[in-house]
Amino acid sequence: MRIHGDSGSGNCLKVKWVCDTLSLPYAWVDVDTMTGGSRTAQFLKLNPWGQVPTVEFDDGRTLAQSNAIIRYLADGSALIPADPFSAAQMEAWMFWEQNSHEPYVAVCRFQMVYLGKPASALDENLVKRGYAALDVLERRLADARFLVGENFSLADVTLLAYTRVAHEGGFDLGRYTALRRWIAEAEQALGLPPAR
Image (cartoon, rainbow, N blue to C red):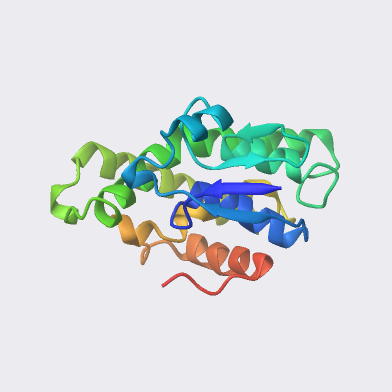
């Protein structure tokens, strides 16, 4: 399996973390998205959307979209709850991440880390909606160890990716006690060093 990705991208790191956690062998193929690496004719044959991550399997099949990839790779593992309702709750968090968290928290980070914008230049609406997403997580994690109860799942992998580095997008995590506790526990579950 070859993972085509950008090692600075939370969406790409989700795939790497799941592979590492489940001891799935892979080769990492670095793609420089800032210089058009995901828009070449060769890459577009793998993924017509021109996005990373994209996984290329040994049989020639490819799969894109980080949450679809990790859902496929983790099938049958402890990262997906055995109970169907809990598995659906996990997927609900994964859909929510792509629709209500990543477009704000990750976009602010992209603008600061990749484009070099200062926090003062960020769109106020993006920042407001990013904090709203962090507030949702704080409320949930004040009542549960992980997003789907007591067991670590793909929901946690998905939301950890950009939440642990939200400060790089100008977000102050200091006021989020439960969220910071969860970040530390989720990093530990994945064997990651604390985000700086």
